[in-house]
Image (cartoon, rainbow, N blue to C red; front, side, top):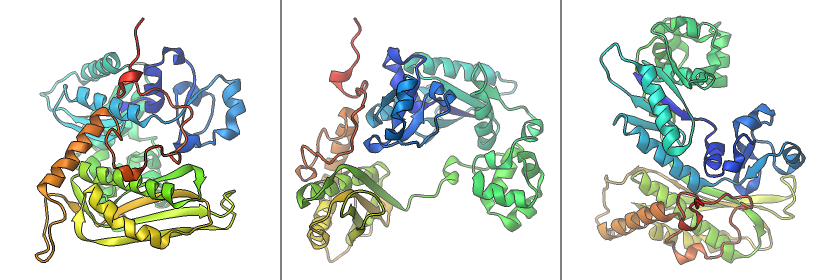
Length: 418
């Protein structure tokens, strides 16, 4: 059986765990630079505020409804996610994280087995150890577990076990609400008269394969209880790694812009090493608006990059490759609003075909140094160690004026019990 564990209102719930004054109060979490609402507490959802609405346009609403607004605290959310996954690992070694707040658990047990009791025990343990509330959907396939989780979140006990025969459950479920189908595929399916999950499940496989991908055919089989999908199958394999940010204030000189590019390159390289990859090329870009007023003003996009002579994941080596191209493409006299770095041509880090006529770009010593820096920054917080070329003050970093403390990753922010 598969269990899909999903934390309720994850970002907002993390904020509430360490701030008792937010109990039963609506909470909104903002995007980079405090731009728009990206996460809502259950109380805020009931007030009808939509996701993605701009913060500055709705300050009156927030004031009228006593909404607590905070900047995205990624250090806190990442650490809480890690804790949730570690706790789930105490119930079974078969834990498959699907997103920052979701994971599949595979449990093998002799029938009959009380899966409802297991779901309640997992839910109670997570709430006791982290303060977070989760929904638990249980079913013989991942697709059905996803659907069961949606039902679980509407129930007081927060746990739902899919019936052995799911047909009654699927009978009235719109086809576009199925995991992996969505609006685009749902529209095509409805055009063929397949409007519900049950109709999709009962459609012959040869009919589905004739008009759709094998993934849709597998989804149909999963609806009838036949496991054939891995969670990673629902996502496109990574073909690139990137990091981009909008600046909190326009940049008009090359020094801070260069620092931003180097900093984003460092973040992208850390992602590469986390996934045990190397990149064969690097691109970077700037967005600018001459009057820095709106997208309708004259402005442009500046793009630069290079193919690497050898696949790399070493931050310093990639920075050295970028540096000569910066001066070539930098355009004076404009106001820059955004920059980004993209690493492409990815390949596994442990597969290497060295060039016989070039010195090796990355040595075991460099790999060990980078891994040490990554481990240190994961343990004590990003930028505990960083390259001087990334800048020190960084006045261009995204605006987070409403940032909550880093309760779990910074000693000075640990809550005090009085």
